[in-house]
Image (cartoon, rainbow, N blue to C red; front, side, top):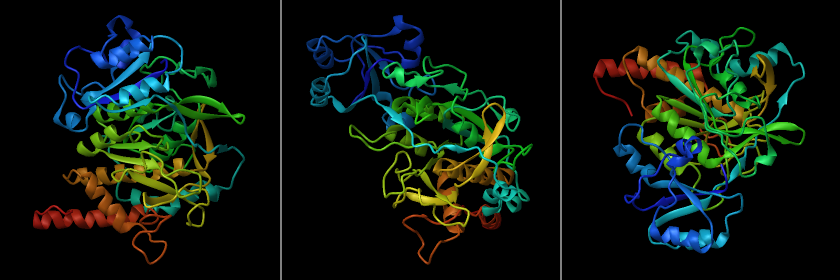
Length: 440
């Protein structure tokens, strides 16, 4: 994908039919070289040709009320026809047009992903993260249900890893990077249906959620299904591979996951707000309208900082706890943090059917994601569909507090306690059956 801008209008374009950008990549003849006369004229003044595409595609034959309410039907991607930078004056001219709600240059976001630790650690460390959330007690109540789908938006997944390959649903790879491609390695061009991992980050996350326990502790929700969505490519940084990708492609991954049946989405990633509209705003709003729970990493800079999507109020932002149950020194904090979960020396799946320890809020988030999937499974087995607000209610009122305050600046509502969460949920569901009233 060459240099491009993301454009949100106040009303959808009616004068021309624009293709979805993924289709335009493989079928260039579909693209349009116009969108609105005023915008076309600005590009002409700068002597720049462009390809006009729809940023998102409707889930059905037409845009749904939820998609329209989230503004997804009026977001567009304008891609330069030549390999050159987008002039700031062009962006400013477009921003001043009355038809334009916001416009921003497409950027590549480097995710703050902590490195894996490959040295041999103790068996206790191997089990410590699972014991910290009382996973064995939780599994005595439920191990999940294959009707509950968890989307993992990340660097992809080792698609043939024996720990979870039978749990995988057909996924998608939204990575397509041409502008700045010299910094990337491996597969970074051409969106396709093979979300294979080249970094290991997404593979590690997936194991925490749904590993079968062959050569590692079992995942939090081993009987749930995983929908792999690759939104980050591989980049060399400081002698190791990290994940990076276009914010717009991450957005597309979120919408695709929702439209393909995910009830929970894990986003062990985050970007700062750099202007031109909040990152992921439309798709996170869409997730909320569709009742999908989104869980994200809080960040690893150890400061009071906002990383998106975790900074959105509707997203569960997860910080990291160390082996002692305290907030890890690197865990980003602030009012946006919802909970902390084990995030230091977490043992899980790695590339080439392997295993590794890893540290970071990226690896704390999937513990909460798995907990959400487990609670949805538990409720579904009892004939109740657990809503996103109900999930948050249970987690909020069963987390182990780190002090006397109901919410802590660094730990949110406290440490994840999955066993207490399921016991409380069981009590609430029994109350619903007795009274026929739904709790809030």
